[in-house]
Length: 346
Image (cartoon, rainbow, N blue to C red; front, side, top):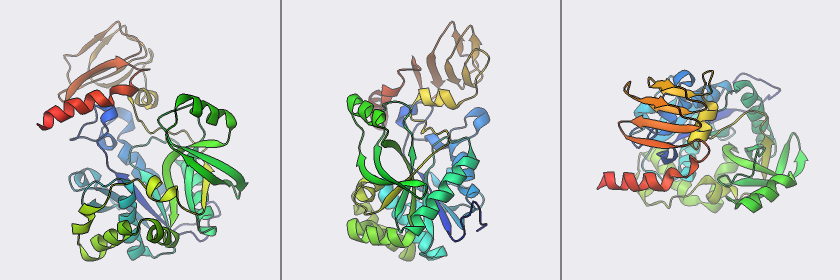
């Protein structure tokens, strides 16, 4: 690994987690084309952004963990593909990556875990923060994660309460799951909380000890998959996130505050915000005909689509379905989408 930013001895492996169907961006994101792999015009794909960020850390190993049906989307030069036998949330996926990294580069490495569907335009700042996080985690035999300074009282994110500042980061006091609005407002005003970004740093030896203590089945079945090619037990695992299974129980955790722009692109409003816009504030993907529209997000795979005299609306017209809503209130479509997808499966 090339030494950068005074990180002298930290050996890094990166695991990109590529799972989930992305119902909040339906019909743009759907079971056949999940969110990380959607072409977003000039931006490219969120997955390619994630791969680029992973390699910016000069790692010894980059892996993508995904289901068999998604692996064809994930092939990139230099990226090792790890098949997830079935979807069991993020804790078993992290265990798979940890066992593979341990086998290939040793237990003294730090495993960086990145979602495949985030938008972080500034790769240099991302690199600086993560190299610092990896150094803190390794030096203190602790888990590390990136915290996002809250911009508003979001109810859709988990929160991290921090205490003492140390070595460029903060010690974690507690985790708080998605709060109601009043609680979120209180947390933001206190200044002692960050959004949980879902981006982690795990020294592999510490991760193994903690998983052995709190979720040994995940570690055991991941080892069976990597060492023996035996996937049978993986199917019997209880689905769980790395937050619930491990982070909320771990003894030592440090947070490094991000100083970069970040979005989990979790709804059409956040997608609108990251896309390039024309002089009237419209973000457009495809070739629809547009006249006298302002501040709209318009996506269509048909040249026969016409959008006229619209303001602050989302219009998505694709063969998978049609959606029309406002930019500001595009968050709450998940339940309706699940009803449609449920009917399609019958």
